[in-house]
Structure formats: C-alpha cells, structure tokens
Amino acid sequence: MNFSSYIVLSTLVVAGVVAHAFVVHEQFYPAVIYLSTDKMCLAVMYNFAFALFLLLGKIILRVFIGTLRDVEVEQLVDSGRGFLADTILFLVFYAPTIDNREVGTVFLIQYICCVIFMKVFHLTTQIRVSHMFEVGVPRLIVNIKLVGLMALLLGCDLLALSYFYSVASKSSTFFTWILFEALTMCSVVLVSMCKYSIHMIDLRLENGWPAKSVCLFYVDLIHDVVSMTLFLAWC
Figure 1: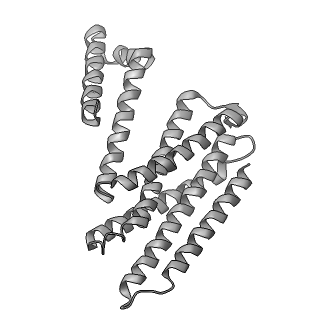
Figure 2: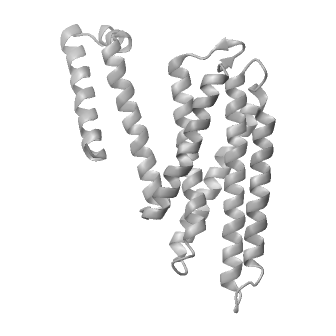
Figure 3: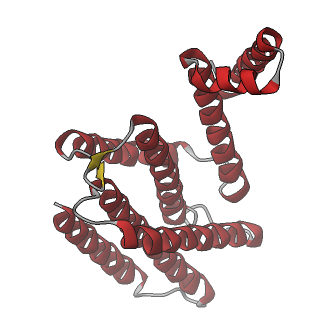
C-alpha cells in the first residue's frame, strides 16, 4: 500500500466510524462519548491523526527540500536506525517518568512521534546541505527554502530548549531525555548552517576557498566532540 492509498483508506474508515456513531446514538454528546471511549474508535482516530501527521511532514518536506535523491534516502535511513536504537534503549533501561510517575502510553507515543518528526527534518537538512553543492550551484529559490527551513528548525529547537530546561529534573527523566534530544538537534542545525556558509563562501570567491576542506573537517570534528559530550552528560 502506497502513502496515497493509506491516506484515502484512513479517511474513509474514520468517516465511516463517525457516521456510525452519529447514526446509532443520534445526538452529538452521546456520539462523542462513544468515539472517545470505545477502543476500536480510538484506534481509528489515532491512526487518522498519525496519517495527517505524516501528510504534514511530506508537505513540509516537498515545500522546503523537494525530492530526495537515492543516496540521501540511504543516509537518512542509516541515521534513523541509530536514533531508533537509542530511543528503544532509553525506553528499556530508563523508565520514563514525569514527577516520579510513569509516563502514560498515549502521552509517551505523542511526544516520541514529535521528536522523531523533528529529528527526520534535522537529519534531512544536514544531508541535503552536505550534497546540494556536489551537483553544481543551486538555484536562488533552493537556497532561500533551505535557509528558511534551517531558521525554522533552529527556532523550534530554541523554543524546546527554553521549555524543557525549566521542567527537566531527576524526577522527570522523560523531559530530560527530550531536552538532550533538543540539544542534539540544535547542534545538528548549527553545524548545517556552518557548512552551508562555508560552501557559499567557496562559491563567492573567484578561485574558490583553499581552506574549505579544512574548515569542513573542523566543523565535523567539533560536532562529533559536542555530540559525545552530550551523550556522556546524559548517561
């Protein structure tokens, strides 16, 4: 099943469930109570919300990034596997808590989906910046979209840092994990901005920038050191 079929099928199923609820219960309030309490209805609603979530992600990706090349998809999948492995290890070895209480399943899934959503866009931006200058000078509109996406991601990261820094504590391990993920994503987008700036300087100079490779090397080195430091601080 492709994505379009999944969206259409999810929409038809949720429309059928809602119509069935209003036909059976006839009034608005009883129908809403039924939809919000019945397990099958909740499963259908959550699936529809997840489909809309994926649709929003694909729209944003198409607007700012466009179509991913095969090599970019491969790198995104490889990076995503590492993040999923880290997330699973966190859930297994660190019982997610908020104020010393175990996090509810629905609440946990919602936040993890949001973190994965943001992580995918950060990784996609990082990969696109690394490869966009290999096929020639990008068009102006491509540069504007990419800079706009990086600015948007950085703004979201700063908002997440300001919020979760105030609520993270030893009694809220789940918020602490999200805080460190926000720090990691913030470092990723800052590195992407640095690499983009280096590539643009190289394009603007008549004979190129001889120190470009050295600068890119040190940017990657600093990013690796920061990432390791964050990982050790979290552990």
